[in-house]
Length: 485
Image 1 (cartoon, rainbow, N blue to C red):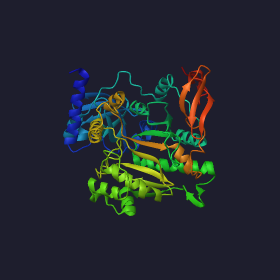
Image 2: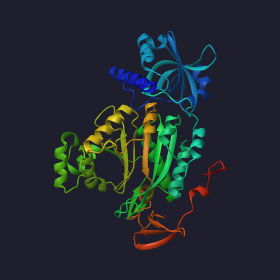
Image 3: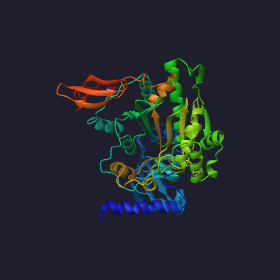
Image 4: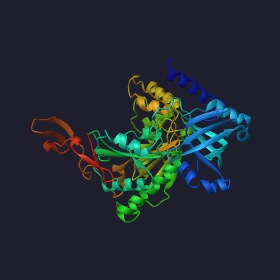
């Protein structure tokens, strides 16, 4: 067994010890009320008033010294020294910390700010909580600075996005909220210490689409460290309402003769309540076989290997989704319907998530992101086994799994279909005619530099091939021109 494998084994055992003590090493939420940047900015007033704060961050260094331990904490916005001692935590609390915490772990600390004997700004822990157990040691050169990380990734980033008004408004909104745009690997930025990361990506869609499907998707994905799905829900409401107001000079939009009001707060309804309301099915009282019979009676095709939650979702899509014309937040889907969402701590059969629905379409989903690598592995294994997938199929990104094992802070994740959002705002009935520059399927490329394509309504259309992105330059807001190789 190599050194890394041995460290990983020991740390997994520590995570299990935390669970055995009745605690979750990857909890759904944090009570952090102050970033480390804010703690430093307001240090003098907070320390003078002896006011308790709750901070959180990654342990960058840990130095046990007899009856106390000194740690350097970093949350991506700043650094702070933390003292854990027997006097403040009690002998059992202190022993629990020493036995189970390591460098790389992400910890929540409640305590009072003060200056230690070396006049260094410090928080003395009155209580603590593990937010994420690090299974792997951090790299020696871990990129903690968001700008440095951004520049590093940009050196070999190749992208070309057509920005619509909606995309532009989303970017402006998120940047004002303190989010940093990342071209690739947003989860890795999060593990590296960045607090708020977003990326916008464009994907071609299968040509076999009906009227309701987009010919291509443009998606927004963001990660927000030390937040949960509840905070993401409030931010999503604020963002979409703001976009509707700016683009259409008001939050109320006329669609098919009816006014659709995007003014917040939107209506909220539990997934299980919605299912019961429109189908009479009580999800918690019916088993998988019973749901399958209900689906068959309704002539709903169920994908091979579908589990209980997936069968329920097919029924939901047919009977419930079309009823939701007005902006609605559907809360707490059943366990098994979202692979990367944490379970609710208050009800382990429900997920800590929500879906945003308007005009009978799911436009966005958000959740408290699963950061427990063991649970993630177990879900992946169960999913493959249940669906009969080959073991080498849909393999997770090995590098990301390793980053997850180094410890990732609790975070909220949101995925938004920008094209569906754009269509929901002006009330367009068909995307195929309205979205500009649809992706076309390449057929062949000749020496002339022309590409033959085949798209809906045109059997043989010849278009000019686009120049390589390598010959273009991208400009960042700083005004600097970056050569993309």
